[in-house]
Image (cartoon, rainbow, N blue to C red; front, side, top):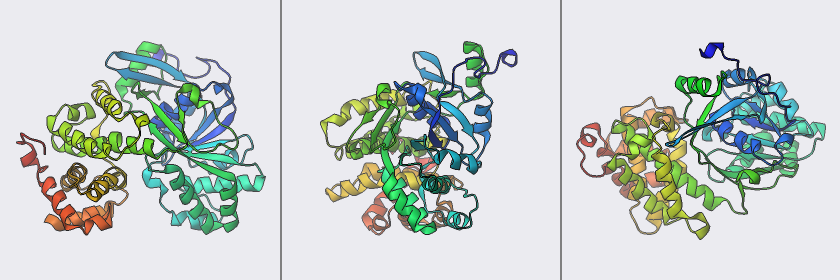
Length: 454
């Protein structure tokens, strides 16, 4: 039946395209459920079109381009589903089309570049230095951005803002240093121009966006009367906190509920530790205990205890009434328990060495500095250590180093794994022994019979 329906596009839902004034790197489901949604709901949305570029693969751009950039957001809660067509993406482009990216970044009307390129993409790209020096196409998002910024300088197109929306603490400054370091290796003058003309905005972003399934595609066809090959499923909750300057302007995201603050660190720590930290615990402990989704794992008393113990530790280091920590924790339990959002633990589990460095390590360090054990944070690391022992092929930016560490045994293996997160803590025998003891409790034969918190 769905094959007989018209394909979603501007011929089905005609509306003029907004001019491209934003460029996005990292076209994926989260970008579409978050930055694209906020831009659509800005008070001046008609002035702000987004050109979104994919990362490693062209697939998302090809599907979305065939629909003139239109897609459906399925907002899913236990009360039911609602549907909305989002029109703010006016170009969907293969990331390998560096020429088009350069043209847009160099265009005077472009005012904002947003990033969802994953935490691991902010590392230094030595290969890009070689390619940029040779005038060839860089292969990473930041390499491509530097190429675009060089063209903007040469075109005298004026300042703009770069907005990182990845789960990194102080992500604006992380992006600033990554871009500046790469540019400096290529052209010191370019690095100076970037320092003077490009602002880097820090953000905290939050909206659970699971992978779209074939059933979701069929649901949209039945409920909406058109074929959409690129729908996005998301929870009703969404949050965006931003801190920084926009020298060339920006959409009125505050009309859609975005919050602009002077100091973002408390908000990003709240999200990184409470939401993302809980996700990491559930991803590893939950899968070891036979669960596949966040909602399933949260319903397990062992996993819930581990989450709440970590939250108690993290909350001690989140000061300020504006953060509303008790309400935030209660809202997270409600969001995680949304049984109709199939947020898969295997998806969350990837890139652990980068994520745990931001989610577990700061809390563990703070707790030990206060004279406490930090057992809740240590348990997150222990669950990961137990999981990689059973699943050595887990995707990770340090996969080779993880494989080498995993060849060790006992406390030596734990010390080698902890060293990938924090070298100093790995030299603390008390920390290593604590993580080792906790990791043993996650062994499949132990966990299967556990009657108390692992």
